Image (spheres, rainbow, N blue to C red):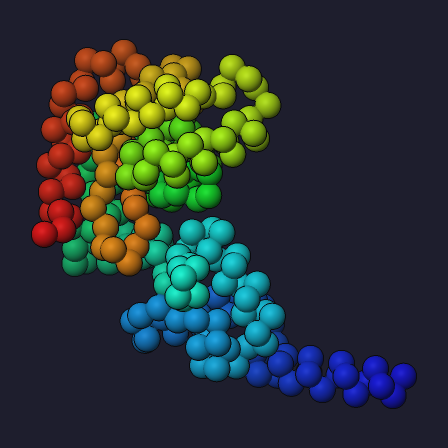
Length: 268
């Protein structure tokens, strides 16, 4: 019993006293402390940097960082072993900033496209073998009865947004990801052939956008384009989705709207 008291009690109590007052959830506080640290630092950081700066136990810091990376709020560079916030963090409160200051933010871009089209507008990035819809604008009363929960995951090979992401990769990387996707897909009819996908991606690269019909929702289709991002950020894609009949009719209009919308984000 003496040994147990010496090992456990001082460490836990000291850490509890250091992290917040009564009634505050320590793990929640740490999330905001971490992002405030990055806001002040303005560059990537390693686990050691964060532990030294914030005084967290290394095991707790590692779990927190891995969780936020899985949720796509952080990007991890396995070569430098550094973490950096993604643009998903900026989107969380961008609507507040936009109401006062900005006309060229990502949140405003999504909202403006939704207002111009009346369609669902999706902003996505890769999350392992999926595309994750990190921000979107959609009508509460869609003609499709099609509501997509923010943060939803879709297989990279089936979603238009995912195909644009795949089009930025080498064929070797694409095949590796496709084999993993097919291995997890129990419905054989939804598995995709390697040559079929590579042909689709060649079309995406040539025309500069992906177009799908019924690959996720049988009634809906999506047109998607790559949104230019800084080299330090993961690739992002923006898409417009609606009923297949409307998408076919307005295809050229949507393509032009997407081209115009992403123009201010082009990186010279």
